[in-house]
Length: 294
Image (cartoon, rainbow, N blue to C red):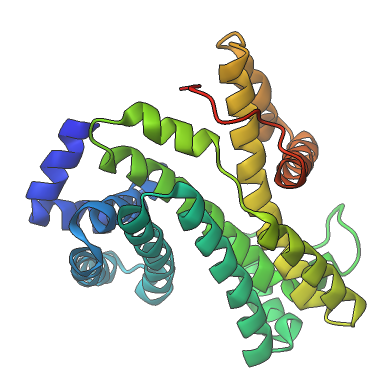
């Protein structure tokens, strides 16, 4: 990893092509954000920003030649790269994974509220878009599904998009941070396993619930979706810390991540459980005092 990071840091042209090119690949597109986060952490936000702008130019050319939807791809790329740049810059400036994640979650929460202010009627805006996507994919809209499920999803799209982007950025930051560290890899792993969102973001859950109670259902639910994503990340950190601390057998991760790929219902239950673990850990630490678990 360190050798790869050194090579990327010293070869700007290759780094830019990796940023633009890997975004188009479905299985490794998060590596694009990881390179941006690593660049921001090691070389500074200005270098990372110029890489992103150059990457946008390459991306537009590649998609124009292939006839792809370059406008939506560029918006998606800039959204993820902006989050990776912000998180990477803060990680490099403060050396705190906690602070970087906390800021990204807070920004996603603010983005949901701002979206609801700019376009209050999310359902009317997103419903035609979702219907068009379903028609383009040749999928049935209501087969075996509850009535008006698409309308309900459209109303929650601000939160769904913000939570999805947040999860992608957190994974990119995790990968980028592992590339950015040089000698103290054990220290980096310890930081990740000790992730804690803090009580201010726990209190934000009450803000989301209050918004729902005041009639701002879409905004409140969107905020809760974003916060749930952050607390799932903390729940995973608690679980991995526990596995390291008590030296669980190596195959334990198969038991955890297997249901995520096998069953949507099991995955949903697992995510709710991880979110609950993250919230409880924020209030009553489930991890002992900081140890040398690596």
